[in-house]
Image (cartoon, one colour):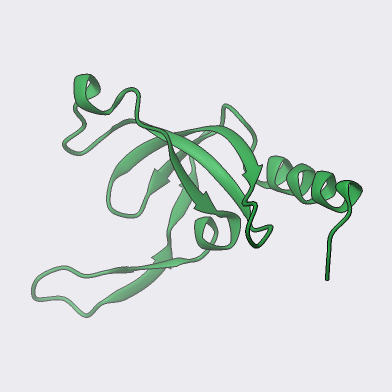
Length: 99
């Protein structure tokens, strides 16, 4: 099904409501990320969240400050598998909003 421009705009608005530009999120592995924007992937119209790392375990501002990542909204709000040595693996939210 081909989406109209209005459909795409609505998808972006929904993403922006869920993960607003400027919001800060904690990744389940310890990184802290800032949402910088949203887009629609051209091949399959997947709505993407754009973000960059701003802190957390092992953060190196010189190396990471200008790297922008993109992740599908469904993945952003999905579960991650936390595995620690000697513990039972645990499914937890991939990202948790902190501000």
